[in-house]
Length: 273
Image (cartoon, rainbow, N blue to C red):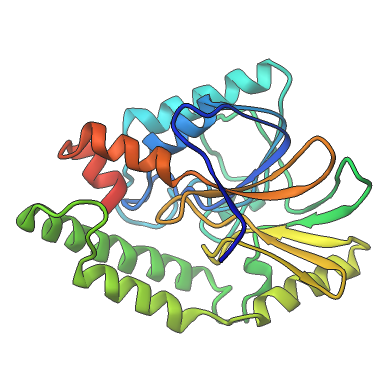
C-alpha cells in the first residue's frame, strides 16, 4: 500500500512545491473538472507540470470543454500572484520541446531541471519518456497510443451509458485498458533508468510522471517519485515546507464531482471517456 494522503473536496493544500503530470487536456480521457477543483484549493510557491499536460497534437478530435480553459486561467492567476510555474513537456506534448505554439498557462517551458528541496536534497525533474526504448520514443507510437486510447474510452462511455453504471463499477473495456497498460509496464526497469539519469545530473533522486503509476520508493538512498496521472489515478507529489516529499490522492475530489454532476455530457466525457 502506497503512503497516500487523501485530499477531500473541502481540503486546502498548502505546500512549498507540487508536481503534477499527465493531465492529457485535449484528450477524451481527461478530467478537467477534477483538475480545476484541485488547483483552486491549492496554495504553492512552485508548481511543476511534469509532462503530458496538454494532449492536442494527437491528430484526432481535440476535446476542450470550458473547464479546460478555466484551468489555464487559474494557472495564469496563480502566476500573477507570485507562484512559479514550470512546464516540462512529455511525449504527448513533445511539440513544446521544439517551440510549438500552445495555449498560455503562465508557465516557463523547460525540458528538464534539478530542483533543490527545502532540506537541501536535489531531484531531477523529467517527464520520464526519456527512459523508454527507442521504438516507444517515436512520435508515431505516441499518436497511435492516443488514438487507441480515445477509441477505447469512447466505447467505455457508451457501455456505461447503456448499462447506467456508477464510476466505481468496472467495465470490460476498462479491463482491456488496464491489461494493455500492464503489458506495456517495464516494472522497476523504469525506476532504475530514471535514477541513472538523476545520478548523471548529480541529484539525490528523480520526480517524474509518464507511467501513470504513482510511486514513492527508495533505492539505495536515492528517491524515485512518480506523480501518477489525472486520467484514472488523480494523484500528485508535493514537497512540504521542510522538504519532505508526499503522495496526495485526489480521488475523493473526483468522486464528489462525479456524484454532483453524474450523467452530464461533460462529466461522462471527462471521467469515463
